[in-house]
Image 1 (cartoon, rainbow, N blue to C red):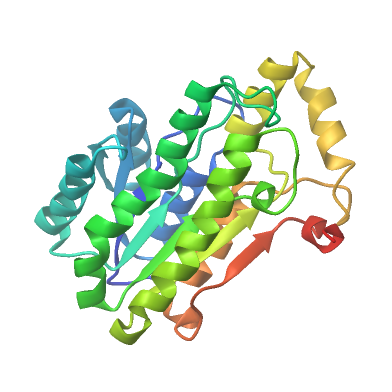
Image 2: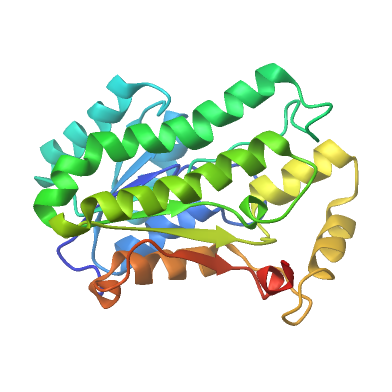
Length: 259
């Protein structure tokens, strides 16, 4: 019951089809187990409802690239729970024309930046008054690609900018008792990562899993969504009450190779 009495919004709580669990559903599930009331938000309402039904939470359909939709998410949390203590920004997209800077598609760049960066900013902006009142916590789900990579310019830049947003929000709100941190997952065995890369690269799923696992220093094994969820639980809980502005790699040691 590490989150007993807490009210959490998990943006991106729906589940991409696949044979493993995604970060959003894992975070929502773990938070509910630890005593939080959870509003599961997703662009696809049926996916939000599936997660909410599984954990005994509430569901809300919203596209976070709209400021009005972000305001509606917070209003829904107030209606259902009476306020907000925790905001998890878990939305992130890639592919669809992304690539190295010299070949990436302009429309893909705009779309990815709009979702990954602008969407996170809009949810933070909408939720900040309530989170200041609660002296709450924001956890942004970034990526190791924000520090290292060369093949997905839009995704990499959007996540690097999310890191900077995290630090900026942390410093702007520290005097109000509102904390903001980010998690940088490395190579994870999640539906979006595996299914998406398998389809884009036309590689067998198990061959892709083996290839990705071999790159990880720690036990040559990918992480999974529960690793992300456990880090989010710590950063959202009162155990991390003196931690803000941190970019926490959850990556099996891969970031230790950077530089």
